Figure 1 (cartoon, rainbow, N blue to C red):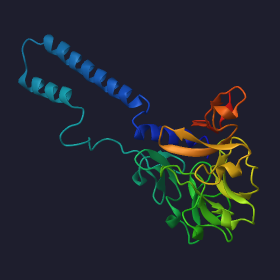
Figure 2 (spheres, one colour):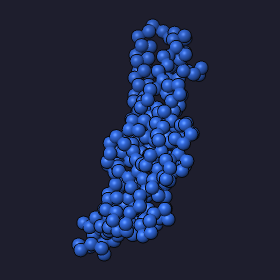
Figure 3 (cartoon, one colour):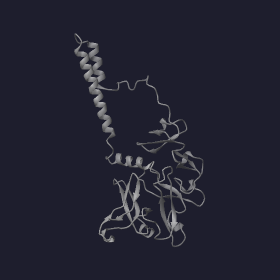
Figure 4 (cartoon, rainbow, N blue to C red):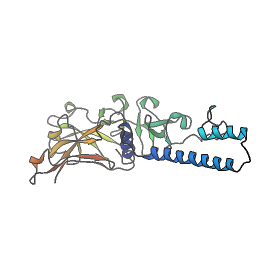
Length: 274
């Protein structure tokens, strides 16, 4: 997955688990300050009057008490132009006609050509194209929702479990070990460091050839796939990924200290001996 989307994913996870950034609080604080300033100005204006004006007092109370009238938003306000391809959005209604807001439901996304495989021609798939989601040709490494969306001979396989926030299924040469030649394993492969692409696949590999810092099946044949050990990296307790690394415990390290696998805004890394 690209680092273009990984921070968005991490932010979404942080909001879900209640550990998100303080931006909303700052915005609320700013609104409170604005309200206080309005009240102070109103008080200052009132003190210069010779006497209370009933109509002015009523208007001031209504304004200071709420920024939104009981009747709803001002019908005279300008309506934002619909978003074009690649523009950030929160819902389909914020995108131009025939475009879809594809991303994390409730947390935002980008205006795209498709929201799922069903929005594409038969046999086509909805995949990330570098700046938005577009209909692909079902080629290896493209996102998918079913085998039917992938090219002949490919399988729609789960490469990475993103907890439902993003589609982690990609057209692959295998979905399980049984799809590989005898003796080979079906291992997940994904690149978090490609800034303009999001893609991955499952590929048939020889045992013990997955290098450190690559994905592995922590709940499957991960230790057989890795050159070293397959251990779990955890993202805020919400997403767990198997990553190949140098050690599984302190006992595997000469100095007796095994630093666990990690996942963050810049990708993931396997365990290392400290």
